[in-house]
Image 1 (cartoon, rainbow, N blue to C red):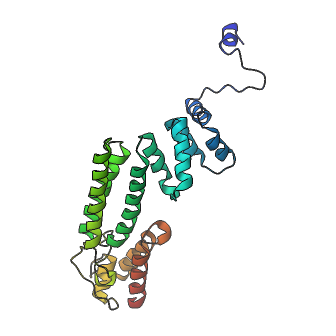
Image 2 (cartoon, helix red, strand yellow):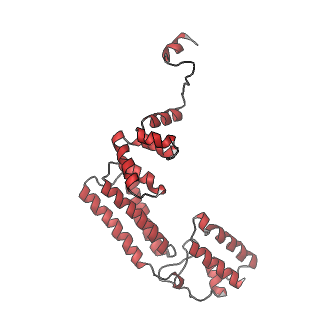
Image 3 (cartoon, rainbow, N blue to C red):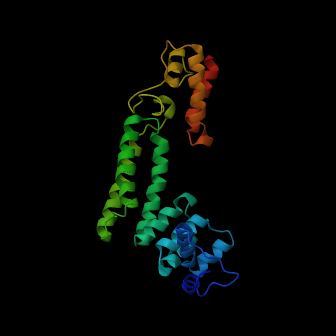
Length: 246
């Protein structure tokens, strides 16, 4: 080793490892920033590495402790823990974080109720994704607590209005926006699907061949399968209609 190299790293011993990769340096720095509570959970395998790294990167020791207490005291789905962390990094008050979690829970319920109706889903995506979630994830929520309360209430009320527009009985209404021109004002019969309705369910022309029908059916069984994030209701609806009329 040249003298100048030796002088640059005087504390490196025989058992030391010199890390020069920028990504690894950031990772090591983030982990070293963790308070003992989080470091212990990481060592015990009780927290994901990527989550622990984000904690170390984004939160001061004080906020790390507050995050730990919040997640310990509040029932928070794993998929939303990152959003809680982000909210703490924005210095949002805990009451607002709870309201945001309620908004996500509310959105899940409403999405399930209106997924079959194009017009309502378009409104939902505009309100929830393009407005609320964009504003939240970008850190653009109001800092003033009264304004913050007002805007969260506005989003909750807007989503609730959509939910109230959804028909309560799916079997009397139209079907998935994934492959149709359905709307909240259109109808399907509650009785077993006719041949014409089967073509409509599959989203194909009545002139389609048997092979085209089977191909579209197999495709829908794949995209609608609950294991792939699809709708169990729609999966069973299409499956039952096809098996009845095939």
